[in-house]
Length: 206
Image (tube, rainbow, N blue to C red; front, side):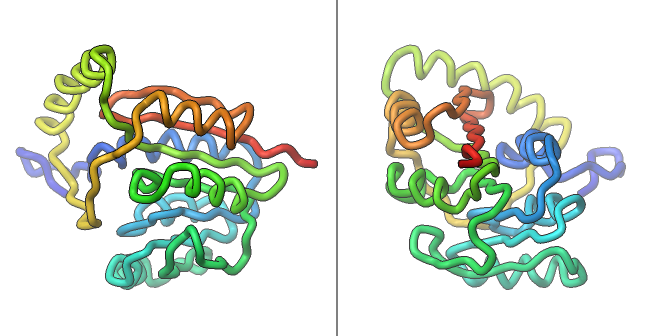
């Protein structure tokens, strides 16, 4: 992607903005395997494969998986599979590191959290970057704080259209927080810019 003056600019959108955060969590300890749930165009999975020996990008939509495989044809550490993460048995599961970016709001929240928990190996780490529905006045005020940063980022970096299907979140911020606390005890939940939240959960080794 090129900027207004012809310089190379890294692709950017609300989801890509958090890829560096996900990579930082992944690099906090050695990982043998990783799963990118809802991989879309495969960009995050490819970035994770630079440091992790086995990375699987899983997506419900075959056209997304085929496109990702064409984009990254020579990555020996990386493979892409098509399937519904709620029901698909992924070869190699559970994984030392599981990432789920902007995907869990496409499914039932509690079912999604439970399946992501089960895909994470004992001693492994799960990272979720998700969206929630504004309900309270405070929700709308906090969401409004993202408007200016988004405008500045788009002006300077442009916009990468990922092409994956889109869906508005149905669960409120409080509902997400409560479900995370129940299903992923001890997880760190944080509300973030760009209408996103993050969850980091380290599954106990036992």
